[in-house]
Image (cartoon, rainbow over all chains, first blue to last red; front, side, top):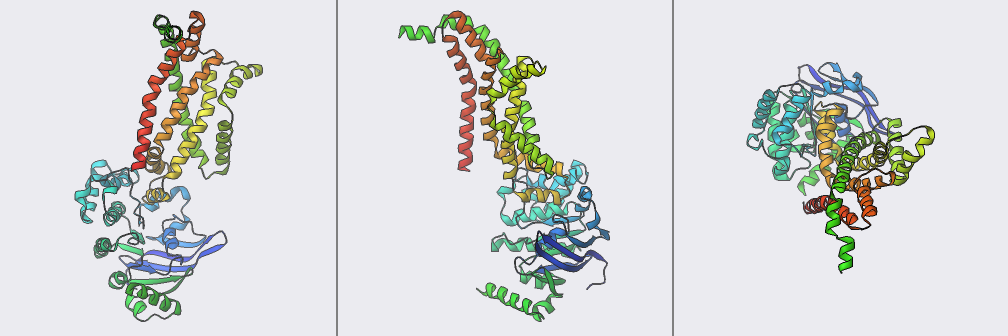
Length: 252
Length: 222
């Protein structure tokens, strides 16, 4: 654990869909500037946990603090202000298909953050430059590759100056040869000191770039620690089984 | 042949009836404009209501939509114009037609809008909300533009139906296009004015129907 202050803290988080318990007593901390990776089999509750962090999913109980604000206490109608501080990147990109790339990155800046149009445009071009897609500003999302779309989605979130970035399987929908370009952008973000919570299956990237790795299974956090420790010396049987399954897949 | 042309395509009678028919056409256009604009607005509101998380709003919208899609528009019209006076509510033909067709049309437009809104992937609104856009902004900037584009052919088809529907207004003696043509027929004792009315409807609606077909084929290709 780094000595920096905590940017995101999840405490005793529970989530139930009707009778099904999806998250059970989750505790997790992400320090400022940390990159924390969440791994685990599908259905383990990783994405649900991530979606609770900007209240796209409503926690059943427990608390989540972001930048020392208890976001689980915010009334529903005041969520928009909180969401400006939490950027989110989805597996399916979800760019707005009826707007140009530039408009995609400008919209929330103008409508939610209240920036002027010239200001928002300058910022959008800056962000697009950062993800290497300034030259695609006037293109429509459908004209871009999956990797390019995901980088625009990252720029769209970054343009709002969030305190934390949430990544929900950002490379799972991409062709293998396009994954690298997105991971590169994420690595640059980390170097700039962005706080990131990433749900992903990119084990090699986790090993290389993550400060900490969290293993979830069946709605519980089973194990967490530095990547070397978690991958090199897994303690629980469930993590061992998971890692051997995953490496088996990678070999195949 | 001579008799046929004389009965259905009598140029003299057509020219004679033309001013009356044009007057009727103007009434039809006015009626269409009012009914279509109100129907679109009402339909959109109803669709939003039918998709609302508030239970009472959702159910009352759905009941309204189902009810007025099931009642024949002519029954509605006769009820509003001839039935309501028994309760002391006496309406001019134009107002009665507007009310009856609004009730019918808003329900149809609501179904189209609802289909359009539900056709937009949930990820779109989630992405919009995640960037701090409010529910109203999300609907206005992200969901509705895509929804309308997805159901544009259906919206246009429905509009064509509205234009045709307005001819029913002749039963409450509103002097729209059909009523005027029928009037001219009874005065001239010749069917040519009716043929001319049909041609006028055709002249307006045929291009529209063509556009819809082409658009739908375009969608199928893409």
